[in-house]
Length: 342
Ligand code: SF4
Image 1 (cartoon, protein in one colour):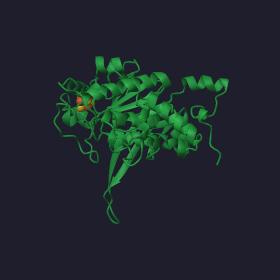
Image 2: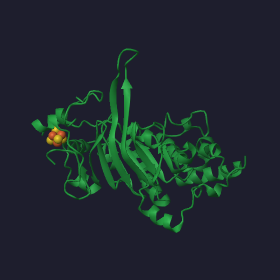
Image 3: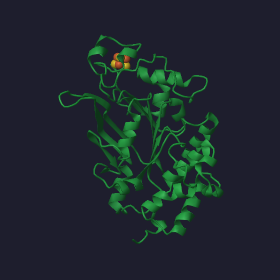
C-alpha cells in the first residue's frame, strides 16, 4: 500500500469549490439534529425491559472555530452524546452532521480525520506499554499517512505544539506527570489535524493548577489550528473562560442554551442557577460540585412527569408536574430555555 504524503494530513479532505467554500463558511462545523439514544434495561424472553432515554432530542449547532460547552451533572447523558458524535454509539434517532454531512453510515476512518476526542483520564486512555512516539503516531500508521521518517518528524512537531519536550517521545506514560500525559492525549488527538475536537472532561482528573495550563493550551491550539470544540464538563466554572456558547443538560435533555454572557450573566433555568451557585464554592473544579439541590437525581429509566427537574426545583408549581416545558427561544435573542417560568 502506498503511504499518503504527510503534507496531506490537513488537506486530505475534498477541496471545496468556490461555491462550496461559501457554503462551508455558513455550514456549522458540527450539528446535532434531534439526537436521541435509548437503552433497554433488563427484560428477557417473556418480560419487557425498561427503556432508558440517555439522550433525548438534542439539537445544537456549533459554528466553525467556536467552542460549545456542554454542562451537567454526572450521568446526565453527556458522555453518551460524545460517543454518538464520535461514531462510537449509533443514535436511536436524529442525526449528527459534520461539515453538513451525516455521520451515520460514514466511514470511521474518514470521520476520524475530521473529529477527534480528548478523554477525561489520561492515566487509563494511554497504553502504559507503548512509548509516547508510538501512542501519538498511531493514527498516522492506522491511516497509512507518511513514511516512518515523516511520521516521526510529524510526531515531534506535534509534541512541540502541545508543549512537550522531544525527549518525551521515547518515554512511557508512567514516566510523565498527569499534566504531561494529558498533553500526550491532546497530541494524539491533533496529530491528524482534525477540524473538531470533543473534549470530554479533559481536566477533571488533574490538579487545579494543572487544569489552568491545559485549558490555556486548548485555547492556544484552537487559535493556531482554527479548531471547533465541544467541551463537556460537570462544572460551569471550568468552561467559563473557554466557551462561546453553553448548553446545560439535565436528564438527557438540553434545558438551557445561550452565549457565555447569557448563561453566566443572566441564567434563566433554575438548574443553571444551581450549577452556577455550585461553581462559586471555594475550590471550583474539584470533584462533583454540590449543587445544593440534594442528591436525589431522578432515575433516568423512570423520569418524573412534566418537567424532569420538578422534584428538585425550588420554584416548581403544579403545571411543572404535568407539562414538560419546551426548549424555546422565548425572547428572540437566540437563547433557548425549557422552563414554564422563564
Ligand atoms: Fe422548575 Fe417548573 Fe421551570 Fe421545571 S418548569 S425548572 S420545575 S419552574
